[in-house]
Image (cartoon, rainbow, N blue to C red; front, side, top):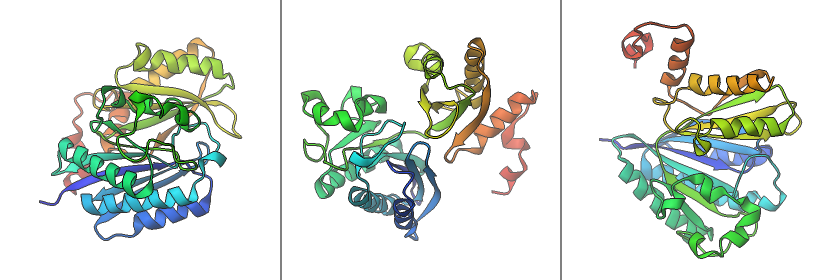
Length: 298
């Protein structure tokens, strides 16, 4: 049986077209996996690549992309609102077919060791691959960001899992982990009041007693009016889009703030949007597995 994984590789540049196209070319150069998505987010100055296919080939491609990023992305020159720690910022390894989470942990560690040894990058394992409990949550690793890591890495509890005990001067550090698929919903608010937007993000996220499995931050987007609430949902089956949206809408209404629109980030399962549509039209006794035509064509 063919093993299939997904790797989502995030890089800290979404504004330099030459860099984006260089990474995309590397990601596309294989017969044993597909590049199913490539997104350059100028607002965040961040790009994401979605690879689907056989593990060994994808891991090799990811290594090549990281090598390119080390050579072409200088973190000392990068500016953007999204938290980041390095040029090859975060790599997620996700089980898809005939692969267990334990397999993905093994793949993460294999890639991490190779990156540390060959690219001279400090590597931190997160998620299910984490070797320390406080590294399971990616936010704990990112805290302090690129600028704060030279001091952070000197603390005994923040020694990297692989690579040197010194931050790469231009490429920073890299986080590599195994996890289930996450989805992101960004909600744009009709306000420039970052303080109020941060209040909303604080109220809704799990960390502060809000929705279980939800992470949220408020961001100002360069050159745009309004503030964005950027959310990450750990389990869409337990926490659908519409629940997150309605909670943000309620908290925004309390502060006399309207919602402009939303953005669905990246590639997501069809079931996510089906859940949302079924909720808003109040579809009674709707079963997507049986009632969606395309399910019979796949």
